[in-house]
Amino acid sequence: MESESLSVFTDHAVTGLIRVALALAIFLAGRIVARWVCGILSTQLKKHGLDDMLVKLASKTAYFSLIALIILAALEQIGIDTTSALAVFGAAGLAVGLAVKDSLSNFASGVMIAFFQPFRLGHYIEAAGTSGSVQEVGMFNTTLLTPDNRRVVVPNRLVYNDTIVNYSAEETRRVDMVFGISYEDDMAQAKALIEELIAADDRILKEPAAVVAVNELADSSVNFVVRPWCKSADYFGVYFSMTEKIKQTFDQNGISIPYPQRDVYMHQVGSEVA
Image (tube, rainbow, N blue to C red):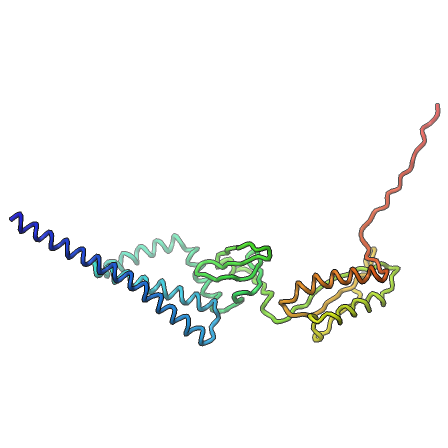
């Protein structure tokens, strides 16, 4: 009797080990297949001209969906009733969903961002109180890289529910600058010098034409607005370069740029002689 019981126990143990081994094999092989399928999916979506942001989100969603199916297949191989498991997972999913509603909101917002595409990878945007170049739009977060090389991770719901300013959406941008000259200086000369600098810069577009005009007669200066157009990628280069060149050109031609100053007069009061 004891030998028969031992034999039955051994058979069950061996069968159990085989099922566990098969379940593990299904899981490992399934992961490889899931990555392969997602790779093909990404390639096909790119061939059809879909944006990289949408391709990455679709690929990740498909991958995790396949992994969920693979886990169910592995559990069924072990002998777990997947129907009951799905019911348990469904109830647990409802409870977890209520607990992680912000994460679900982030996922939904990520889908909306990928679908409507208010921006793309590499675009410079301002949203949720920060600005930077879009590095990645994940399932739950959007990653921005600031101009000073800081990586900022913002929840998707905060990005999508906020006002989004996309500085890279259009091919061209207008550079807005203001320069003041003294009331004693020649306005026509100052305007001509600025226009010469604009005409000499190849980055500045001929159309739309740049605007150089007197905008304000301020307390201590005559202010010019200078508004050239350039490609979006050249915006900061034109802004910094024109600011420096205009200052140098004004200095070379005797045109002053007023700055706030205060005159202090010292009066010495003689002491009374007794």
